[in-house]
Amino acid sequence: MFRIYKDRILFMFFFLMALSNGLHAGAGIIPAPPELRASSWLLMDYNSGQVLVEHEINKRLAPASLTKMMTVYVADSELARNHLSLTDTVVVSEKAWRM
Image (cartoon, rainbow, N blue to C red; front, side, top):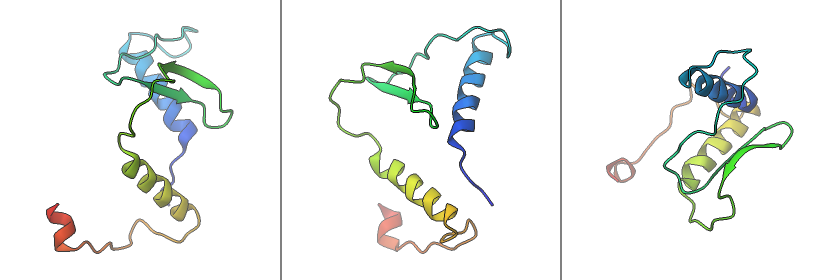
């Protein structure tokens, strides 16, 4: 069964960032924060809550993709509770898919 492991996603993110900066695993070097086009961002360790890197986190901004983030959160929660399966069929109305 598919399950999102947030700590592994964070590890993969930093591992890939290190590779893209020409570093290799085990070098003991912490890569520089990524250059993003976002105005403000925060990356936090899922298990400890420790802030790993941030940029202008106190800047007031409207939510970007809150609907998408909440959909992933609800789907992951329902998958974990076995209330939802990746093989379930989802019915979408014609009006919805035209939008």
